Length: 329
Image (cartoon, rainbow, N blue to C red):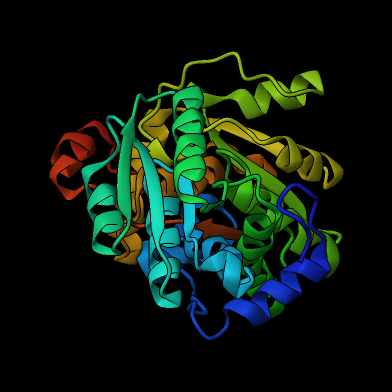
């Protein structure tokens, strides 16, 4: 396994798949004829909202935790997270029987905080900025000796996230395109590694909120551009694109598709209406992207990663009235 700050390769994805196999689910690939018709494409949904902790994040967290030597693992792990990664790391740590510390920003989704606490993590609260999160995480590491597992730049995390696309492309090697959400880029970068190895003719598209479009601006400039304040309903996609993630995505020729929140909220209603699957906005954005950019996907076989289902049900009534009904079933 590479060091946390070294770019991983496809061999690391394969190692991760073997390492997490006793602990993570192999999630199903779902289909919907009515959504195929709405999109004018053949859609294959990788159901990571059915993964442990309700998100793909368990893959990377599990790989990171179980790659640690026993003497290092005994000191525990730490991270900063707005929800899903924290819950995933906490569960992976509990399964291995080691401590877990999670720095959480003010304003994080309550359902996700509850999941972190249920998994047995120790919570440390901070201001809702990247700088504050990283500073608090560094203090926790200094005080406890825990190993920091970054939510998306850690090579072990990226390799673990790549196992979702590994499963999808092993089951459906003839896909023409993959669509994944873009926040910090852990899932996207891992997907790129698996796609380049298993389906080099496939295109990778990154669905990003228009209100947190540092990825789109970074690709346009050819360098990271973090000068923005996120304003999006997609709470899981408010992080800034990581440097190693950006490098891997550039090498894969990925393309960013920005999506307005209104379109994402429409998809948030559309997915459960057609598929009877409840996902969070940060997951529904992939369906929104396919519908917003129909010309790119018309007639093609498309894989979409439904990244998570940890929706704050108390907030659902406020979200869905803003969404349009979408195409009829």
